[in-house]
Length: 290
Image 1 (cartoon, rainbow, N blue to C red):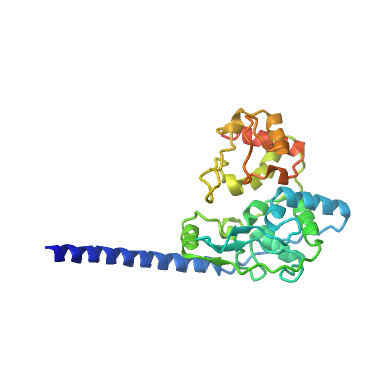
Image 2 (tube, one colour; image 1 turned 120 degrees about the horizontal axis):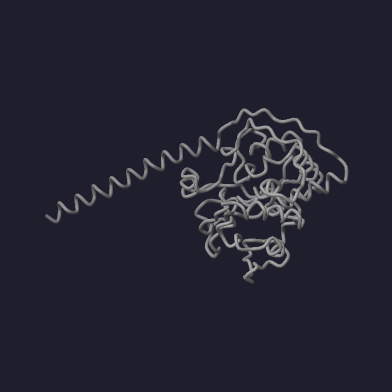
């Protein structure tokens, strides 16, 4: 009797292992195909300005759209999103200057990366949130490219990226945003200009940056890593629904919520250089978001 029980346990465990191997084989094949997919995209033609006003406007776009937050103040010291000990793999934001270890991009290469989330080989960039940036107006996009291409070259090599089995499984299940190219409408066209205004429409245009952490619905979710608090709901159904407009603006100056709670380091509000009018527009959008 005991031998039969042991035999059946062995059969069950063996079957489970086989099913897991088959599942991971499918995951590996699918993610590898997505990683190596070559996209056929028609690149937009933009006239990139060269004046100081456009450069400063582009720097502001880089600050509020998270470019500097990820790639560093010098655009070369990239944030490590998954270190060597991570079960996901190793992912660090690249050196995007023209220095040694950086990139040598033409204006069209920048458009390919920012509008489509693709590298020079037309394959997807890893963990590059182009789906949050591609919707920039043509003017804002041109100004951003004007800024990034003029940065001082920095010699700094980023370690090779890698993806581990857990990272592949999470990517396959849609729980890890490895390839933003999959989220982009590559045939979309964009407004030539989005005029600043203190209204919800302009707030929506700006608030896209928030979706990287707070999700597309702005409802937040569980923490992304150990030690990080849950990501809060910043729609009208969260605490923001009870805040005043000026309380929301003040949060970005003080790092404290209207209730007096100090925000964690995972919400670096002071790193964002929004003007008070831009913050008021974002508030109007989020406060009405059900």
